[in-house]
Structure formats: C-alpha cells, structure tokens
Image (cartoon, rainbow, N blue to C red; front, side):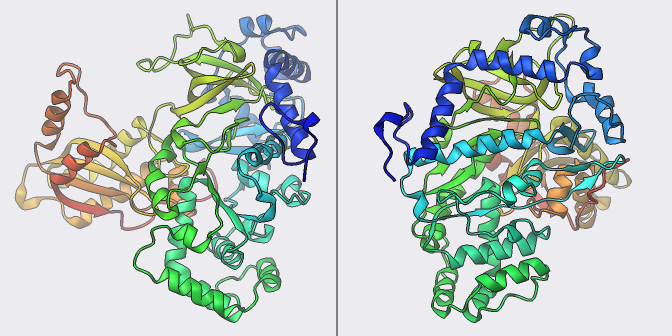
Amino acid sequence: MAVDSAISSPLGPPACEKDAKALRFIEEMTRNADAVQERVLADILTQNSKTEYLRRFKLNGATDRESFKSKLSVISYEDLQPEIQRIANGDRSAILSAHPISEFLTSSGTSAGERKLMPTIKEELDRRQLLYSLLMPVMNLYVPGLDKGKGLYFLFVKSETRTPGGLLARPVLTSYYKSEQFKTRPYDPYNVYTSPNEAILCPDSFQSMYTQMLCGLQDRHQVLRVGAVFASGLLRAIRFLQLNWQQLSNDIETGVLNRKITDPSLRECMGEILKPDPELAMFVRQECSKESWEGIITRIWPNTKYLDVIVTGAMAQYIPTLDYYSGGLPKACTMYASSECYFGLNLNPMCKPSEVSYTIMPNMAYFEFLPHESNSSGFNRDSPPKLVDLVDVEVGKEYELVITTYSGLCRYRVGDILRVTGFHNSAPQFHFVRRKNVLLSIDSDKTDEAELQTAVENASKLLREFNTSVVEYTSYADTKTIPGHYVIYWELLVKDAANSPTDDVLKQCCLAMEESLNSVYRQGRVSDNSIGPLEIRVVKCGTFEELMDYAISRGASINQYKVPRCVNFTPVVELLDSRLVSAHFSPGLPHWSPERRR
C-alpha cells in the first residue's frame, strides 16, 4: 500500500499508514527523550506517592529528579524481598504500587536458588503491547513484502503457580501469550503466525511443538520468517523435526493427527487445519531423510527472508549452528526486554549480530545508569558512584541498568551490563554485553560462580568414601549438542587407586550437581527439555597446571593468575579435552516442580 511522502519518517518510508504512525511515535519519543523521562518519573512518583515504600523516604509530594535521587537508595532484589514476600503472602495494601499487583512475573534470574518474583500491574500489559506494536513497522523498512506471507514462530507457555496469597507467578511471555491483548489481537497482515493460539497455549511442550511444526510444514511456501524467542529455542525446534519427521509426514499424508496429541481444544483446532497432502509428505520425507541437514531451514521453507531470534549475550554461542541450518540467513534481534520491564527495540534489525544495538524507549520506565567497572563487584553504599540519566550516558562506556517502574520498582538494579554505541536523536543505543555475574547459560538459565562452587562442593561429598577429592575444576557451556548442556571439568586427587570412584559414582556426582543448581536450570532439564544432562569430564593430573602455563604463555601474570571457572576459548577447551580420562553424564532428572521451595 503506497504511503504519501508527506507522512514519511526519518527512519525510512513506511509500508503503510499504520507504520507511519508508529515510526512517528518512535521519532517523537527519541527526540524528546529527556523531557519524556522527566514526565515518566513524575507520573510514577505521583501515582505511587501514597505507597508504603515511597512514604518511607519522605518525598512529601516531590516528583523532581533531584529529590528522588537524593532520598532513594539504589537497591537489589534482596533489598526488596521482604516487601515482595508480604505481597506474595496476600497483603493487598499499597506496599509498592498504588495499583493492585495483578500477578508476579518470574525472572530467569534467581535468588537463593528460586526464580525472582517481579510484581506487575495490569497497565503494564498495555505498555508491553505498545512496544510490540513498533517492531514490525521498523522491520518493514528493511524487509519488504512481509504482508504477503506468514511467520513460523515457535512460541510456548511455561509452568505457572500461585503464591500463598493466591497471585499467579509465571514467566513474562507466558503472561503475555495468555493475555487478552495477545489472544484477541486484531488481524495484521504483517504479523500472521502459522501457529494457532491453541498450539501456542497448550501447556504440554511436546504437543505444542508438534502441532506448531505441523502447521509450519503445511504452510511451508507461505513462511517468510522463522523464529523463536531465543536462538536455543529455534535449534530445539530443528532437533524436534529431526526426531519426529516420520510421524509428522504420516500425519500430513493421511490428514489424521497423531494420537499423542490429546489436548481436546488442540485436536479440534488441528482437525480444521490438517488436510491430506501426500505430495508434501513425500517432500518432507525426502528432505529429512538426507544425511546432511545443512541449510534445512531454507530447503523446507524456501521463502524465508530472515530468522527472528535473540542472538546477543549468551545466545551468541549458537550463531554458527544457526548459520549451518539456515544457510547463513540474516538473524534479526528486534527488542530488549526482561521480566522487570520492557526497555527498547533495535532500529536496525537486519544488522550483524555483533553490531546489534537497542534504542531505549524513554516512555517505558525511568532509566538510570550505574557506571560499570569490570574489575569491581559492586559499589560502596557509603559512597556510591553517581548514577547517570538516560540522555547523559557516554558513547563507549559500560553501565549497569537501573530502573524505576510504574509497578513499584524504584532505583532497582536489573543486573544487565550495557555498552553505549551511539544515539538515535537524543535516546542512547546500547549493545548488550552480558548479565552481571553469570558464568554458565544454555537457554534462559543463569548460573553464577557461587552456585557452581556450591554444586561442586555438594557433589564432591560423594567422593569422600573413596578417599578422593576435586583438586581443580572449570566449566563449559557445550552448545554443539541439542539441547546444549553443562560440562564440568574435574581434576581428581585419588589417594587409593584400588578404591577409585566408579562410573556410577561419578554419574551420581553429575546428578548431585544438578540438584544443587537453581530452579530455572532444573526446570530447563525437567519441564522445558531445553537443557541436556550435565556432564563431568575427568582430566589427567596436572591438566590445570598446563592450563596455567598456557595462560602465562599468552601474557597472563603468574602472580595474578586464577583458574577460570568457565572457559569458552576454543584452544583452552581443546587442551582440556586432550587430557580427558573419562566422561560421565547425569543418569536422571533433578527434582523440580512449579511450586517454590518453602
């Protein structure tokens, strides 16, 4: 649809009038970023002025930045935990937010091994929906014709539970997919999915994946983009196809749905969609039975223009595998969001993954930035560094993100480390560097050094009766397998060779480590099937001395050298693997349930 040049945007010519409106909104927000931020903070402080939390700081109705910054401390989740626990236990008074807390969003970050609970209010759904509504108008600037086909997106809901006080606790995307904003979204030719809502909302991950893949195969010629939230999720979908293509092709040939799909609403929905197509079934069998799966995405979905997946941060490790399966298709990272808040979007979504920068939308929350020193673990509360406002950050510098939200988080440290790459108008653009203190990550799991240390200590207790101990260890996120899995390298001191630990004992050590890891990891293993069994690789005595020698040969100081608790540099991994004595995998699944540990 042609759009009059008078309503064109500085970002580029919009695809339609609706896009023109969205692009104008982006321009307005980013041109006036500081004024928007000032208004957002005033709105939040006015709205929540009577809350118990804000009353403690005696703002006395003040809504200006200076009063806010001088009286409120920067906080972490642990500082807020008593208030969050009261809300979770049923206290409905205005503790953090003047608006009722509608549910908790469970973060992929953890505290004491459990997912963090992020309070939210119903109004936040509209704010998130607004950011979603900006994504396709930007994408349409770079990829024309997306209204002529569909998107094959593998989207899933995850387990939810209720707090003792009766509030739902669930991941932010599960909340969104189950919302009326998503379920009753108006038809948009630029945003049509192959997957029906019934498939996305099915709580059984096998049935959901199976029917989404089946619909994607049926619409293979209409698919113009393929995606999942994370790169790891798209690779799991490819692996699922590898394991289930024979049954999927049988369903396509006969038009009869696999009996393993038992969800009534899903069976009814698929009954209307699935029609016999022997020719398509033959094609699927021919392609999937070939020895090589290189380029399988474009072989099956030949009109795919790009992959829509997050490949920044820990997900960058999946880029080579995605390239293999897609023939090097562009990978679009469209938005930056978390359970605490939705932050911004990528105004150049077709850029290289290494060049992805997100423009913070100043209407989403009030943003501050804590200058980040890579050799510093935190800050001294007695003399904290000065936080920087959104428009005052400096290009090239790294910051930790601090937010104040409508839901009641005030000066809250998110834990994301961002590097400023430039500005769009007066709004800064950031490259996501990493999550603070995260050591290992396969999917949405985040394991830090302290958790890994505790897991090793707990597992090594099983070695005591064999008079054996762990001399040194390190770890590696192995993403060559699908799903990926944690690899822990152990160098052991065996004091009695005649009584050394057996394969079964070391397998139990793997399971003991998994039992010690946080609930997000265990959910990935048990419920989501997004993480494979943990592996312990025992290496020869003296291996870690060789590792130190290697590091020193590359310029490390012998006086300051510390064994890295995680490795990803290929020559280091190859050195460790070349000293392998034995490998052992977890023999079962760790304990996990949707209920939080008391």
